[in-house]
Length: 197
Image (cartoon, one colour):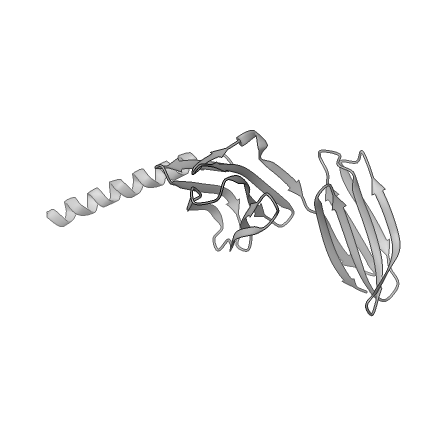
């Protein structure tokens, strides 16, 4: 009888905890304060291999973790020990980067939900001698595409274009045999892809 009662109590506790986490996970990115020191980060729709980092205002990586689960990710962080300043959680997915900025001031951590951003990464595909470059650009940010031919240690610019006022960027390149570097930059984000043709 005692074992049944203990098992029932454990079961009720597990259901309560699960219901709490599911309730918090309704937003795509939710931050929950736990106690005075620990912050729980809850992220929905993560995949194995997504990369979670904490960076300071200078872009220096303070924490890095490859996600090992699919679905909902939850982890507690003690951010109060960080020096005063501005920081960001960054979740890098296949084609997007989600950022959650936060500030530490005298061991007090604060988040601004309105400052969260999503940046879309370009997709580069090589097929039948053609190279396809696509990028979703909902905020119409100016984007530059540079294609360099690589010969030994030399890089020669073969193509350059600045694209403005375009929500969807789609380019196709027919490249001769050789090695190439394609740089796609928009604001402070730059993506580099190497092509062996």
